[in-house]
Image 1 (cartoon, rainbow, N blue to C red):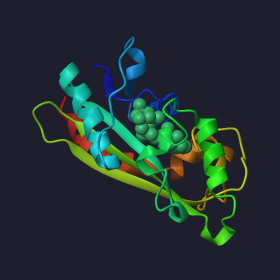
Image 2: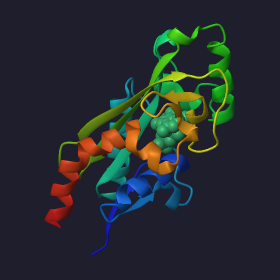
Image 3: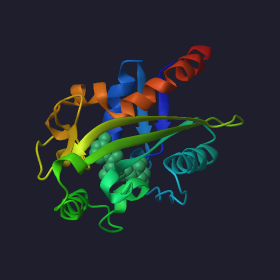
Length: 201
Ligand SMILES: O=P(O)(O)OP(=O)(O)OP(=O)(O)OC[C@H]1O[C@@H](n2cnc3c(O)ncnc32)[C@H](O)[C@@H]1O
Ligand SMILES: [Mg+2]
């Protein structure tokens, strides 16, 4: 039997990363992009964890199967934690990565190098019918650059300098990003639980 997991996301960048991250377990990934005209699941929570739970549980109830959801974003110290859970719609409801970056660079225009610290955060929720939802998280420390660097990745990657890599996130190959990212750290924290689940089948 082919192992597969449904992920409650419409973000192509996330979907591609999960596809790679799960492939090493021999698990195939499906997302909301595979369901025609599926409406967005409203993120009405006040934390990454709440929003991840809402997305996972909503779709899990709808499909009556196990669903994983990712709620993530960029936390900038000098901006009091913004854009945070509003990262996707920082510059407006239409979710435009380039507009979001432009707004961030503008807000950070006068901020000196030593005060540009930030981190990516990822909460993952695994909803299983009839069971308590499992929540894990991961983060990745860095700084906000003053201009775009690199063409890989998605979202805020071009303006996020990842401390452990010594480069912008968009200058990393997907393999390199997957070694240090908030998303991969969160997924590693889910690994023992996933192993249990998939070996039971
Ligand atoms: O809710 P779904 O459908 O999963 O897709 P989304 O794009 O709306 O995702 P979020 O609500 O979790 O918002 C996360 C935003 O944070 C940013 N982000 C998250 N992870 C990122 C990463 O690895 N690299 C760059 N930006 C990231 C990116 O701009 C996302 O749009
Ligand atoms: Mg979203």
